[in-house]
Image (cartoon, rainbow, N blue to C red; front, side, top):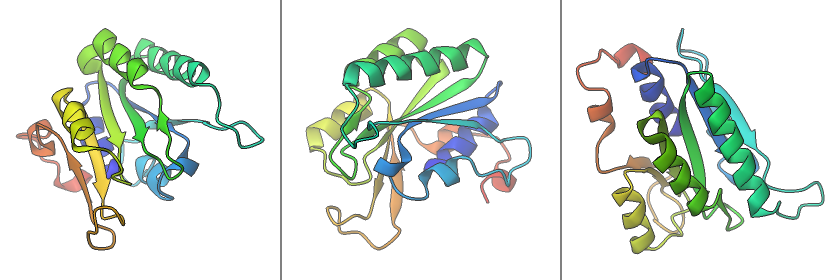
Length: 177
């Protein structure tokens, strides 16, 4: 799922795609590899993961996580990349990162140069929270987890617009395999 959105964005971007995600240990096992899949010629995005925990397992302070996120986004945009920022809402261990204030500030500052994907695959968020993400025009990834009780390996990316809109009138078939 995450990889599909990355491929569509990479294909549509007039510049290269930089993906910034929170620690892959807090998400599904295959997220980082799906995002950095290099089977599509010419569409290999850069991928940077932000470590959420200190070596002793304690959560890094949020001001550090937010500062690192802001620096990586600014650096990628300075190098003329389109940025896909993957925020986690309710990770495997219940984390939300980076902070919503950080993400909203970045989106306000950089507008369409930044795409936000909320990894809500555990679907532990309230309907109000989901609604607020969609009102911000964020993409939200959900899976058939124990909370949604969907079939195994079921997944969706939801948004007020569709991936089809992003990819409209583009011959994407070869890039989406």
